[in-house]
Amino acid sequence: MSRNQLYFTILIACATGFIYLWTGIGFSCFFKSLTGIPCPACGTTRFIQGDFIQGNPFGIFVGAAFLLPIGVVIDFLRGGDRVFRAYLWAEDKCRQPLNAALLIALVVLNWIWTIYKGL
Image 1 (tube, one colour):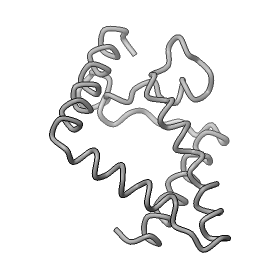
Image 2 (tube, rainbow, N blue to C red; image 1 turned 180 degrees about the vertical axis):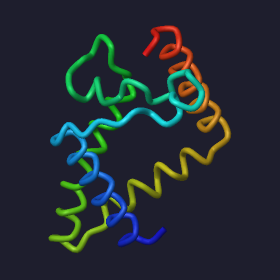
Image 3 (spheres, rainbow, N blue to C red; image 1 turned 90 degrees about the vertical axis):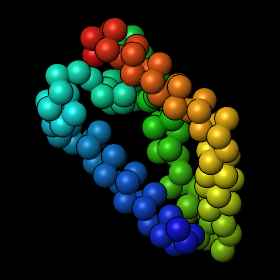
Image 4 (cartoon, rainbow, N blue to C red; image 1 turned 30 degrees about the vertical axis):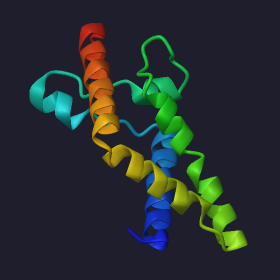
């Protein structure tokens, strides 16, 4: 993925997320509707909106991702590529087998937690 493709994707994804959160447009989870069990991300919106008891801790990562447009705008203004380099670094780390296994294990453990909690 090129720098401009990444930045466009970040801006569109975050704009969509902001619109979803600000307008209160709700929709049911497709995965939960289909299977009857919560998806691994179930409860993320609740966490971002401040419900830390019933929310999913993955909301921390989603909330942090909402800061990415600030870095993208700074990169555009300065002609830099800091966000793009951070993305390449993170992608490289995630491709390492041990790191990938750890991330998968965290997602699975979180999914078990959401099912147990009945989100």
